[in-house]
Length: 438
Ligand SMILES: C[S@@+](CC[C@H](N)C(=O)[O-])C[C@H]1O[C@@H](n2cnc3c(N)ncnc32)[C@H](O)[C@@H]1O
Image (cartoon, rainbow, N blue to C red; front, top):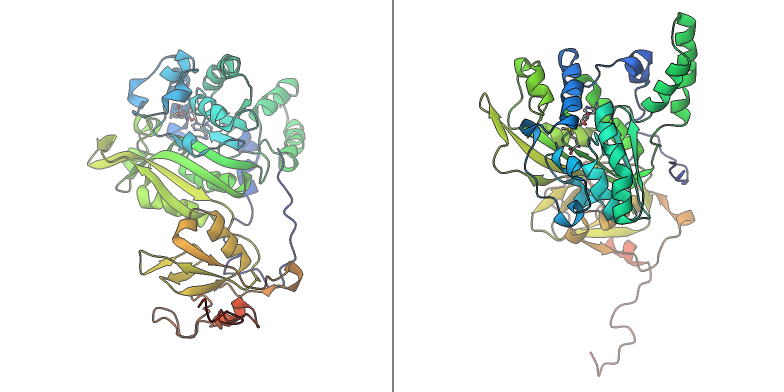
């Protein structure tokens, strides 16, 4: 899986605040060292990591009712799923509904494969679905049903990978085959293994910028707190520009205390690893995503423990606000209903005001989930890419196209004449008009 190189003109400005640099600068390679690759207890805190593996290993063989959360999947897609896949459903939402025909999808913590098999039908024969899971028995369940589903729907587009969702570079099936043939018995063997495993940097299991939708159903909460930043950065790395994460997970209405987090039963049961719900949105924001949205939030709690409510929430977050800012004389008008809105780059759009924006922001607002809230104003004379000049996109204030100003904006906000964006010699509408018709 390979993503496009995304060639662009060089940015003449230093990288810094503003539109450009809010995505992760790089993946932390320290988490991908030998210790992590071979550590069998990396799923959660040391005391509960093994509990996650053991619990889902057992739950792959016999359905565990305590792990089930009722979900209304689209029944059209369930008809072709084998009974044992339907039975071992440990999800808490349906992120597959955010996929569309032709998409490349990655499902984090794919378990018995249910979301992958649903997504497989939605994306159709031109799409591709990758499931990633660390538990052998879950992978066996999913893999043995792959051909059954493929035969029933008429195409085969799913692959199940053994891997940690906090490290989507390292293919653990390959690691295990390599270790079977090259067991580590000495420091020299370990060094040789390290050298061999470096291949995943150049040729990762899931390539950079290659995925349209990353989905996950009730898994992120199981990952240890020390691995979570890496996990979110990995989601960001594999998504292509314009791609999105659609994550259903359990969240809490209060921060979960330490003694509950250290309880293996509560952690592996998708309870005490839950993010406090506002923090769940912030982790995506911090990683450089934009338009982070609560797509669904269960009204009644799924569980209440020590007075803390745990419920399912589905969050959708987009990748693609990073990049250079060029001025193409474009502007936008926020339609309302709010008095003003603030985007993830810190730009304020007062209702009804025409705001100059760089081409990147213009395209982002037009293509993304914001589109219906804005009017998009193209200049009368379009600006060719080679003629565009850098646009100062830095917050807090956004360049304005009207001299009237707006009291909520800083006095230092750059202001531009609206006529600039209409073209220097635009025609008055009365020009050449037949007086008889006007
Ligand atoms: C609650 S089940 C959800 C399974 C599936 N998504 C569903 O909807 O039924 C959690 C799954 O995540 C897997 N898992 C947990 N932590 C993981 C990690 N760090 N890396 C990969 N898989 C993980 C478990 O093996 C298990 O299959």
